[in-house]
Amino acid sequence: MRKFIEKFSIHSVLILTSLLSIFPFIWLISTSLKGNSENIFAYPPTIIPKEFTWANYVGVWDKVNFIGYFVNSMIVAGGTVLLNLILSAMAGYPLARMEFKGKKVTFFAILATIMVPFQAIMLPVYLITLKLHLIDSVSNLAGFIGLIMPFAVSAFGIFLMRQAFLGIPKEMEEAAIVDGCNVFQVFTRVLLPMVKPSLAVLAIFTFIGSWGEFLWPSIVLTKEAMYTLPVGVNNLQGMFSSNWRFIAAGSILSTVPILIFFLAMQKYFISGENEGAVKG
Amino acid sequence: MFKYYGKYAPYLFLLPAVGTLVVFFFIPFFQTFILSFQDYSTSIYHATFAGFDNYIKLFQSPIFYKVLFNTFLYLIVAVPILATVPLFLAILLNQKIRGVTLYKILIYLPVIVSIVVAAIAFKWLFAETGILNYFVTAMGFESIGWLTDPNWALYSVILVTIWKGIGYYMMIYLAALMSVPQELYEACDIDGASFFRKHLTVTVPHLMPTIALVTTISAISAMKVFAEIYVMTKGGPLNSSKTIVYYIYERAFENLDLGYASAMAVVLLVIVLVLSLVNLLCFEKNRYQL
Image 1 (cartoon, rainbow over the protein chains, first blue to last red):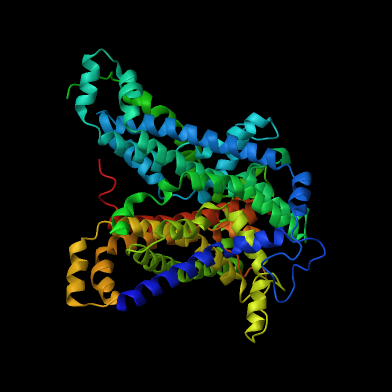
Image 2: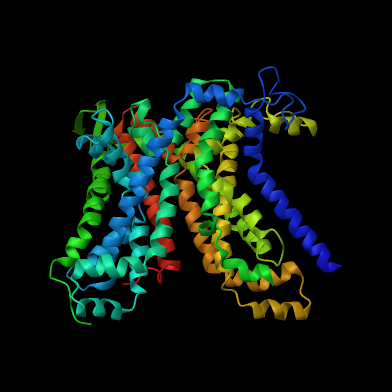
């Protein structure tokens, strides 16, 4: 009996928390599916629309270039991920495996960057980006580079890759050298394939971070054609000032890609580490 | 192991990452300090040396103290909740129950969704005649100006930050829970200890380093909130929900007063630096060793 009560209360708390976690979205979806003749401020509120309609989705899709925002977000997030993988792996390798002058200084300089939030240095970063002409008023390509470069590498990524290289037995490199590999071949053909799991983790978390980034693009972007999804979605509020049906539909539409990504990659986020405890 | 690489190889491998960090981190870092001693208020193309003027202006401004106060209020409200509630949820999810994966997905969902969408969703919940006020009035209270009443706005925004953070910290705790020896729980069960007693005497002491870690991470991210405020309140009403990063943004990109904004950025830098150093020296010494 005590076991039953315990399980019952655990499930109650978890169900309640889950509902609280998704309720804001449920309410947004509900609003987005309500037709013009239905009062969205009705008391008492109705979760299930009385006259279900896709009209708001069609309407917002016609007026807003979601495909464009999506493509821009893909370019920025894709570029950021790619650069993070390459730069972090390249930097992590010597820090894990080589002896050289200045190693300690480099190590601690990179470590120090963890302690400084981007928000504190964003003004000079903006000025430098302007000075380098990495801005969308110059060209779209320059604009994308300007969106990507401040996030092209992070101490987190470098340390993650360094840790991964540290875990590889040294015999692997020795064998490769004996077989006639040079240092670049050791890196690309022997070491990189062995750190794929860490690269995957780095890619996924960099992608999520870059996809949701709002502050930097809203500072540097000047053209609507360059908007990423978060900036575009924020802009909905100005476009449809009090048309909450459209704003809701647009917000939900913009969330679909990342939702698919999350569900496809869920094992990385909520990994099976806890399986042992669950099965029992 | 024999040295199989040339003298310059390590530097070649480091060059792209370090070069990027120099241009987009180290130079801006030092420039922040330089900017804070310059005056841009007449023209953003023309800086004149201002000495400590920006800092004096800052420390004489009542808004600055209001902003600092709001930021610390953010810390004081959000951090204790973000350090404890996710721990409690993680313990529940660590029990032998069904549906764990589904719960995890649902509770983690707010972490994945763009903060802009989350803020819009909450703005809609908080609407004047919105659904939250329906519940409030249905319970017999007066409706609340969630985002329009200076007494409420900051708390409403904090609620969004908390809601979005819970799943993230819960996952950190879940990973840490794996390292708690199961025998200790079994011993508790034999002694007939209650659920709460078991976790207070076994889980919490074991997870102390993780609790400390979550406390510092959530404190640092509370210092950096921006999007919630930008989307929901723009710092208003009457500066009641304005925090440091939003104020920096406003002064720099709306008032174009880069010097003043940079002085503010230096203040942010110092606060976060102190928080990070505490974290690094106390809890993460072992994580980053040469």
